[in-house]
Length: 129
Image (cartoon, rainbow, N blue to C red; front, side, top):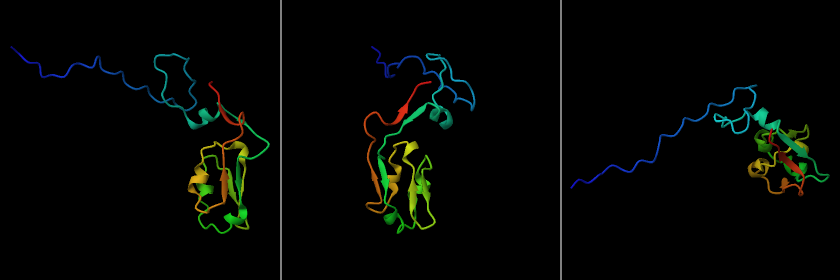
């Protein structure tokens, strides 16, 4: 009698991962066998629509911001929507906001940033190319 100590086979080896899409390269047809697994930031943003609500989903209290020494929101915002003012405050433009909440997370002054999701039907809408 023999005992097989080998673990059972998990099937054929996995296929190698697809190479990233080169900058400026056309997107492959949907369902293509070697579809890329990544896309450049610029290409992804070309598929985004911003539906701007009349009321901002983020408000910034410049009076509170004037006492901030780090202005972390200015450097942390991936959309570069925070701009320091000459009087020490911060201006914010919500129209192109990604809704990631990074500004709210890095702010160390309570009440400086009020953040909520945009009203239904507004904000970032991802489209497929």
